[in-house]
Image 1 (cartoon, rainbow, N blue to C red):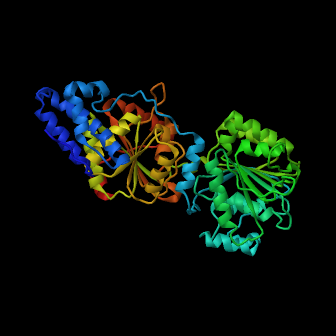
Image 2: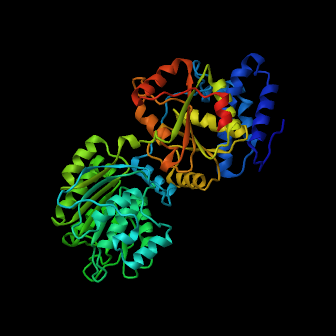
Image 3: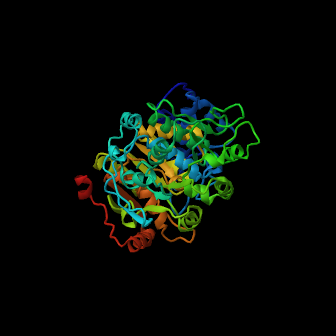
Length: 522
């Protein structure tokens, strides 16, 4: 039969024709159809993904594959259904993980504006007793230059965020102090050190005075873009980007004349060596910032460069480390890297559980799971949601299934290149679609402020099979961001109840079962 149909945009077209074709195929017996039906959804998903990329599709091409091989054998050769988990596909994945630097860049795309965070509390773990700390409630209290205040207002920053209240007065005082600071993405970390830079520089001289290192070119360009917006009324201020294809001004001797340089470790190290086209005089740098400091310290190549650069700076150079997270081993080294720092860190009680209502639902198989997913969508209004799967294969299957059922969803996975990830993130941030399906490789670090529902299609586990409470915390922390309330629903099959008990024990909480009454309340 002729099933060629070009330009059709409804994926249900493909599904209906595949199903009709397979039903008519003598090899697809009624005995095998139940299992086969689950498999063909996976293939239709692949067809739909191809269609979305090309905007052109001919189903006849796919159907022609069956001339030498029946459909059931074809599907058996490309898909394997787990006997114990129904349609949950092969757990082995060759998915390329996102690096922490890539996640940091995606966060900066997501959080293009500042969010209210005044219910966050910080522990001051270290401070100089000779310089008492004090907070500010307005930017005017900092005695910032009028053009800088004007630039801040133009960006929509009318009052300091919590970290800015606590940190800025120490950073731009007459006795500026070194600092190690931790705060979530979207809470104003980047604006904090950019404000400090713009307050410290002298516009009367033209050489590099403030230097910021970021782990990737994309991050460096994003920081520089924010800095330019902030300094839009400071006509004497100039930024340089020390990245591949740099944007920079130099004098006749090759020395950088921009007051603020933002770049990646390798390029900055080359400029410090002074053997290439561009040069920086380390002795004139008054402020050195590591953004995403945990990445810069954790990765050996970056760390070696950071150490070499730091050794060339003057003893009086102010050093600032900013990051959303710090592992214990990283913070120990940070204390060696930064002399006598003030240290701001989010209190453990401020971890993302505070504003999140957690529930669980227990099932016998994947069919009940998927029905529950539909019930949740019918039970209350979903703003935007993230569904976490254990593997790329499960995420792909769920994406195909939900699209066939009329839900506009997309996947964010390590298989996408940078431009594809940017497109998915930008569309999600702009609310062009409501449901993002992702995997464990994306579960840590992404901060998506408008998400109000997290569904754990699979509970996160360690390699030994116990509950991975840290990944769980990162997952559900994608909702309830910045003081907003969120909901997390954990899908559990009967034999996984022990995972829930382990989480309850670790966090010293009780996670109730989600009932029909709960759905009606939301």
